[in-house]
Image (cartoon, rainbow, N blue to C red; front, side, top):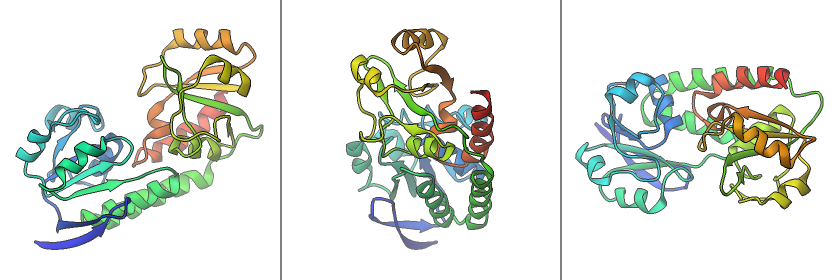
Length: 262
């Protein structure tokens, strides 16, 4: 087995036994990608939020949540590669793993950076052909996606108590723009807390309530509809708007139908 040097998306040089044979994924969307790359035998650990594929969730060792990983359990798995994400995982926890095993960190803010990640993970795991097939399918889906003919001013909620929305430097923001919609919080970074007055002052025409990480339900539509009586308030599949792995193949189909539904 060779030791090869790969640069992760935070510009760290990572020395990885190649191809890696014992992989731990700390990121649900990237776990699904690893499955679609054909790495069932190589992946030995996933988080409790890695629900796709479902049979992996039932059969693979679960090493905690994305924000609360079990470090001793991960080390006991003797991984030769840990795949993490700058936003989804805690910096201190990820850094504590680095002396013990190679850790490759992704940093995704756009569809373009997600496609780059898929190609890089393909190279790291000796699955470049499979990664190329996945990226081609995603690129084809976005090329065929017909943007909304009437641009809408949109607020995309990810949390309640406090209200939190997707800002202008997020993957969700890029997905909204590709639909042809305008994020009313484009001037704010990451996932800012929003009070009622701020929300009403932005005058969104469409409010989307994500199915994750907060489990928004029908009852929350009425809560926001009272604040924004002139807006359309709807539930959105959070995986389709925020999972930046191979789920994007399904996302373009979902988004096209979502536009028509609204």
